[in-house]
Length: 219
Image (cartoon, rainbow, N blue to C red; front, side, top):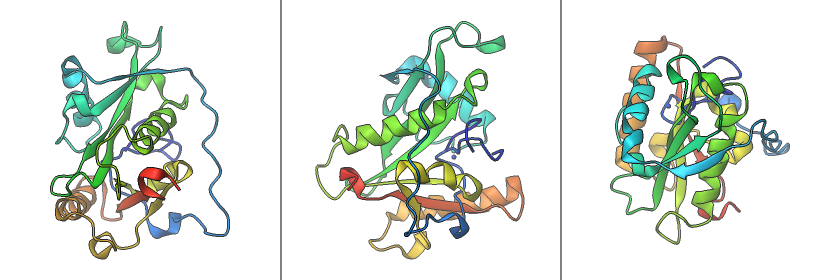
């Protein structure tokens, strides 16, 4: 889920992978494929997360009211751009980050895209979209383990689901009864997150689960 970009949630703000997901009203039409993501607005470099990134990641998740668990910085990619940062963020070239992590109990066959966050100074420049695109590319190119039958899913707010559709994700109509089934821990995260989202953001808030079409191969 993303913060402060296109949608873990202003209309054009990028969704956080850990936020509640979009409703079925945002499901892409099978007759009209989603357009490709817009061209990048800024040039970024990416690196693997380091233990020294942990404080920024934890604080960002807290500020954005995103899932504060499973934040091993080594699972993250960090986006950097020279000359960025202002105010308390001045002097840093980190503009955002996100992760793909294995879902516990799924034998590395189901992975979750999560914790996508863009720092305030870099919002509105396509940073979040580039982070998601990089995570999807890495997953599809077999950087992550388990060679076959891998699935990439995410949880996000219903209102931000449209941010992910250009990257190949579609909303699962019924995560609890999905076929093939989702890992029990992910279903529990969805159910608990739905309750938390309604309590923290209002009774009309919905969480959704999205899955990358074609799995690891992207086909």
